Image (cartoon, rainbow, N blue to C red):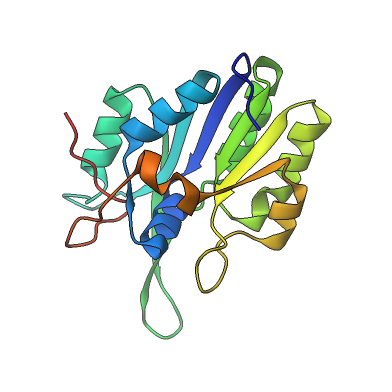
Length: 188
């Protein structure tokens, strides 16, 4: 599915990948994830997308964001919008779909293969647009959970579906207790 001389770019929908890995019972080791795809081709960029709450004194994802930025990932963040729904519940909205799609289409001329870590069906049109530009697209998510975490439309559109659970031994580690947003990582 991968060719050693292919120029690769990774696009990680942080919240989506975290949810999929958590549902499978493991945490992502981003150092190992990057190494895995460096072995599969010529990794040009690894993008990580997440939204952050603006008023949080301490965000549980901050150590992960700092580690990723220091270790060669391109971080794309935006401030999440906080609101109260009609039932009085606090909700947070912070989709990064547009930012991820724009970046993927901009880098398309420089890459041969894009790997998207998300099961969000909103990315189907982006995948189709990348394919029209001659870019192969793999999507990594899971169908091993009670409810599959990848939309059927997205899975049908992709050139290659990578089952996240199949990567558990090469990019995973046991989950930490206490559950953090998007999987805190405290590697050196």
